[in-house]
Image (cartoon, rainbow, N blue to C red; front, side, top):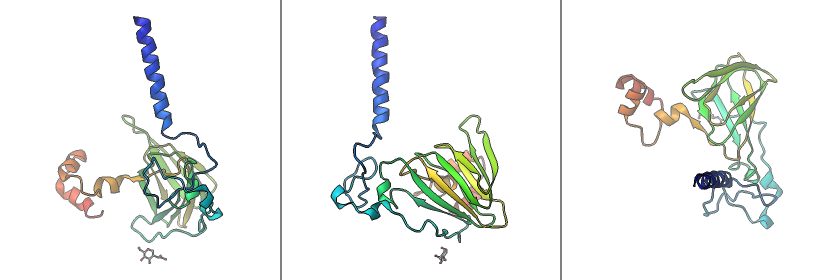
Length: 217
Ligand SMILES: *[C@@H]1O[C@H](CO)[C@@H](O)[C@H](O)[C@H]1NC(C)=O
């Protein structure tokens, strides 16, 4: 009886593993260029007919062009994911260019589907990420030109330009669709808004403070 239970548990655990891995199987084809206009809904983008695929499907141009940093946070992320480069679909990789004015910040955010390896090409940045509860440890560093830092998948992280010059970073990410959750935007700029009772209680403050923050998003 006991052996039987052990065996059953083992089978249950193993089948769970298979389900867990099955969501992104190893590609069984050379490529699956994203068909951004397909009405078919799958986990990600469906594939374009391989006969219709062109070299341009594997090309993105303009990574040399700085993003427009004229915004309140004074930074701009220019992503190159499957949405911008359809040939990336199913490969589990993506890139981004990040431009910062002096004092510019890439505000606290996380990528639900990707770890990120970040190279500072120009300038100096304060970067960091925070570990999960209950420790919420801040792992932080000042980066100089040429430094490479890694942000683990799903953890909140940020970058701040400490210098008097513009800064430029290049990120590589471990998903063709990393996703971005910017904490302040998600919490204070959701559509529709989160009830201010939730926010006042969560942040242990009064409605006036919450309303002031809400007015920015
Ligand atoms: C940059 O963004 C600002 C604010 O949205 C806009 O006014 C400006 O025209 C943009 N500049 C360029 C070169 O696109």
